[in-house]
Length: 304
Image 1 (tube, rainbow, N blue to C red):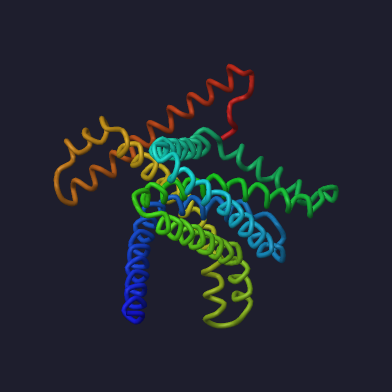
Image 2 (spheres, one colour; image 1 turned 90 degrees about the vertical axis):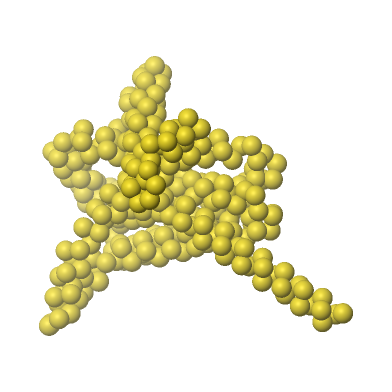
C-alpha cells in the first residue's frame, strides 16, 4: 500500500508538472509580445553608462526586476483568488496602456524632427562629459528609471499570465506565475547584457587579424540595427498584443472580427490586422484623453 501510495503521489506530481509545463508554454506565448518592447526599452535604459559599468548596472536592474516580481506575483495571486472578476478589467487596462505606449512612440518618431533628436542627444552627451555631473548619481538614476520601466512591463506580463491560468488550481497558478517571472527576468536581462556588450565584443574582435577582425566589424555594424529592429518589433507587438486583448474582451469587436475573418491563414491575417488597427485607434484615443486631461490641469502635454 505504501508503495502504491508513493507511485500515486509521483503520478500526481508528474501530472501537475505536465499541466504546469503546458500552461507555462501558453502563458509565455501570450506574453511574448511584450518582450520585444521590454528588451528594447531596458537595453536603451542602461546605455549611456561607462563600458566597465554596463554589466553591473544590468545586474542591479535585474535584481530590481526580481523584487518587482516578488511584489507582483503575490498581488496577482490575491486578485485571482479573491477578486477574479477584476482579471478582465485589468487585462483591458494593460492592453489599453500597451496601445497608448505604442502611439506615444509613433508620435515621437513622426512629430519630432531629426534636428530636435540630434539636439537632445548632443545635450545628453554634453551632460555626461560635464565634470559637475556625479557619475554614481547618474548611474543610480539610470537604474531607478529602468526598474520603473520594468515594473510596468512586468505587471503587463503577469496580468497576461494570470488570465491564462485563471481557471487552474492555486498551486499551478503559483508555479506558472513564478516560472514565467523567473524565465522572463533571466531571459530579458541575459539578452540585455549581451546586447549592451555586443559593440564591445565587436570592437575587441576588430582589433584582431583575419576572420575575427571581419566578424568584429560585422558586429559593430549589426549592433545598432539590432536595437532598431527590437524597437520596431516592440512597437508592433504593443499594438498586436494590446489590440488583441481589447478585441477579445470587447464582445462587439470580437464578434465583428469573427464575422469578417474567413477561415484559414487569410482569416488569421485579417484577425492580426484587426488587432493592429484596434490597437492604434485605442492608443490614439487614450493619448488624446491623457493630453486633454493634462492641459485641463494646466500641465504641458507629454513630451514624446
